[in-house]
Image (cartoon, rainbow, N blue to C red; front, side):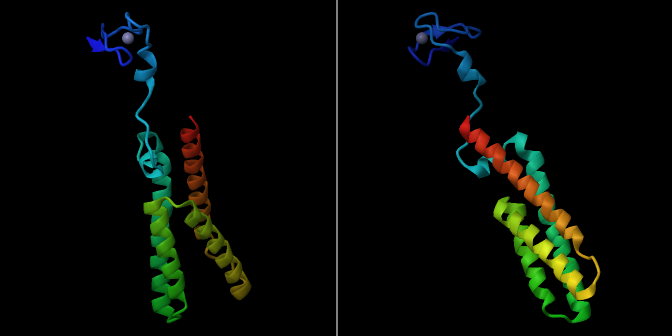
Length: 153
Ligand SMILES: [Zn+2]
């Protein structure tokens, strides 16, 4: 037996409507529990693929930061430390905070780096970070769109 949320009358468990007041039980059962914040929304099972994509982008940033750190140590070019810090911070915010803003900054930074590298050396390098940046931006925007749709429901 279950009780009607409207009038409190007891009804059969498989009843679709309350036999006393006619209240529908169907819409209650079909509604999943609502989440209040974006962080809670990201934690929902259906958002795990997008969350994983953002985490991957963040982890790629850590790898690029490590590569930059090694290059910096080997070449002694202390300016490279700046790239290491930028990549680490952006990676952390994308990985842990799923930040769309940081994903956009990463993409801009990556494109800027490739262009600067091309001007300085005449070689096309660092484009892997651009791919990671595009990946991060696409995932972050998809997540944001899903969140907006969820809120609009
Ligand atoms: Zn009722």
